[in-house]
Image (cartoon, rainbow, N blue to C red):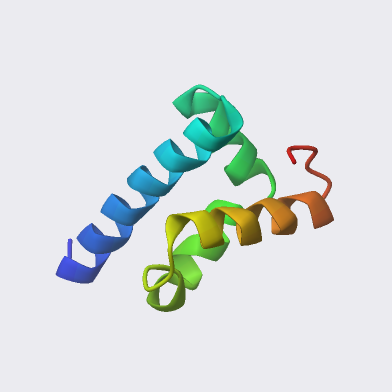
Length: 74
């Protein structure tokens, strides 16, 4: 696994934890929700941008993204 892949994995783990905390979810619930609406793939693909932003900001953006895809967390 490359160094960048490790960085992406670590970022995703922390992101899921922060997302779960924000919405009062268990980690598995948060991961499943994000995965269901394509946010995990989006975060991985856009890692170069998202890791330079605050978690608060990216959680807001990802939450909006998931809502546009049919998610119901607000």
